[in-house]
Length: 447
Image 1 (cartoon, helix red, strand yellow):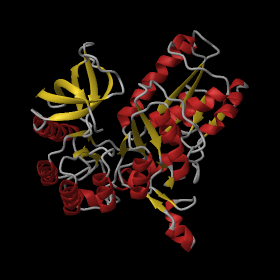
Image 2 (cartoon, rainbow, N blue to C red; image 1 turned 120 degrees about the vertical axis):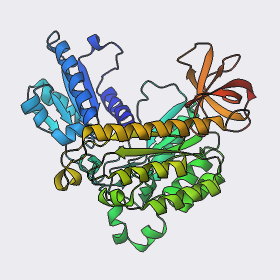
Image 3 (tube, rainbow, N blue to C red; image 1 turned 45 degrees about the horizontal axis):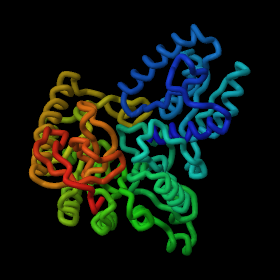
Image 4 (spheres, rainbow, N blue to C red; image 1 turned 90 degrees about the vertical axis):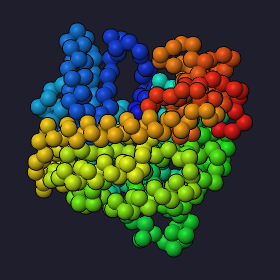
């Protein structure tokens, strides 16, 4: 999402006459787009700002700005206490950047962190940054209403609001015309997408009868996109288990160009911990969802987010997480030790009482188990022929292409006559826990 936001910012700055530069020493404006979801991310930002301030001592004209969630969370502190930046811009205020730049040039306070109930940036055509010309992000929703106790996103990104489906389809059509072959629909919670003419999702029940009858939900949008661009692969992220409907699963099964991959964060396998996290699903409901996915899309890959060491987590809770992982056998995952985020309900109402050594040990056990499951999943591909979209040269060898399958698994194979952006059938001969290795057998007739 931050990468997508950066493309919006680049578009706004282009209109002001700015151009991107690959050389930091040539820049007169540096913007750091930030994340607040974990403490480590904020530590990384501070180190980066120290680096940029070192450049500023040599170039007095250099302006430094902080964008995104960390800007929203710390607001004026960046100017008053940190004294490391000139501009502070929250995720809903990017259109105000030209004005803020003028304020900074005049050495006046340049801060806008006001959260919007309407802004979706649907009227801005993003500048594609570091693009391979093959895959692109399209944001469809912003904000989150779920209020998980560990998560700072609702406070830094605001309430859920969805983008007009017409503008989404127009952006995707333009990308397809420009040769892009894969689109990822983005949102803090894409399954909550709901367009009924504008407004917050929570106000839907107040809408007119006509608005409610003609509303477009995520399943509807997914079908609209898949039908409009049958030659383009469609992905989406991120899903919340409580909002993922059986209709979405049926739509995925219906259209070949919707990738067989779902990122489905669970966070914990313990009902007690899920309740304390304010996750609106139980372990059993999550299993039911997994079963529905496996039944309707047998070769669907599933990945996860998992938090180790949430406050009060017992050894039994941890074992529940491991047993849930054994049941699902995820293709891959994103695993973290719990870090308290200021302003969240967990920070206000619970004590971070799990020792760091215990967090690290539990996290390592989760990582080790996931590595076993990842290898199990990739082993299933040996001897099979899969469709791979070529994205770039392999990092390990310039003689090999690298791309992804519908299941979002990386595959590498000798380049031969093939080109970036082509769909190629690849026979898999060997695997690692994360990568498929094979040989191309021809251009693919499917995607």
